[in-house]
Amino acid sequence: MFRQLNQNLFSTKSTVIKRHEIIDGYKKSIDNEKDKEKRDLLLKRINQELARNIFFDQDELKKTMQELIAYSIK
Image (cartoon, rainbow, N blue to C red; front, side, top):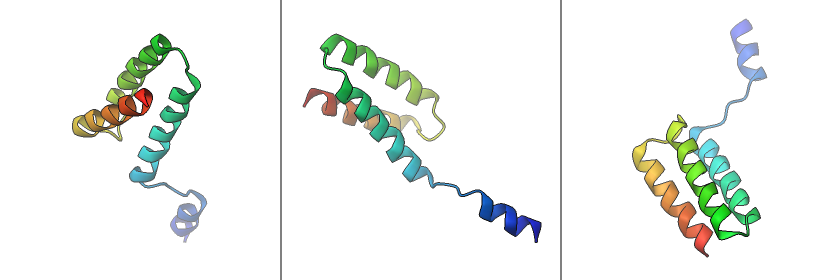
């Protein structure tokens, strides 16, 4: 009985939703940077953060960074 109550108190998000929230947050950060040099530094920092993130493996990291770089160039 306690286990059922405990599970209802804490809602968990799926990893897909968490990934999209992380990527959307990075896109907002990129939008806020107008200077090209600062944007490049931001992309380097994002790459380092994603490399340590448990929700992204190496293939997803590469794909996400390509997406973010293309987004920053637009």
